[in-house]
Amino acid sequence: MWCRSVLAAGLLFAPAPLVVAQDDAEIMARAVAAWHEEDYQAARELMEPLARRGHAEALFRMGIIYERGLGVTIDMEIAEQFYNGYCPLPDDS
Image (cartoon, helix red, strand yellow):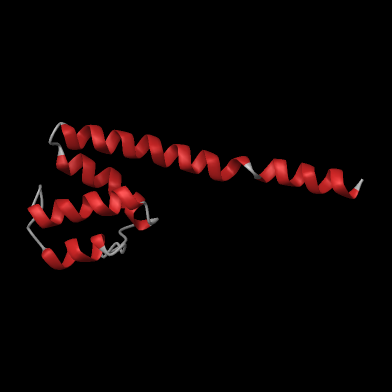
């Protein structure tokens, strides 16, 4: 009985991280599509929340945005922080 309860609890809670990862993947896919269309503002708006959660590709691309000045003022300090895995932007939420 105890094993079934533990197994049921494990199955009940296991899918949650997969759903979050899938949502992040969908958001990142939209951000990359905007990036390829050179809509860097849209890409940045989609990637910033992902970068705050430590999403590696979002952090890297945000670094590129600030390094190259793609829709923002070039800021090498901010770019470096993104490249180092930290989102230096204030949380507006």
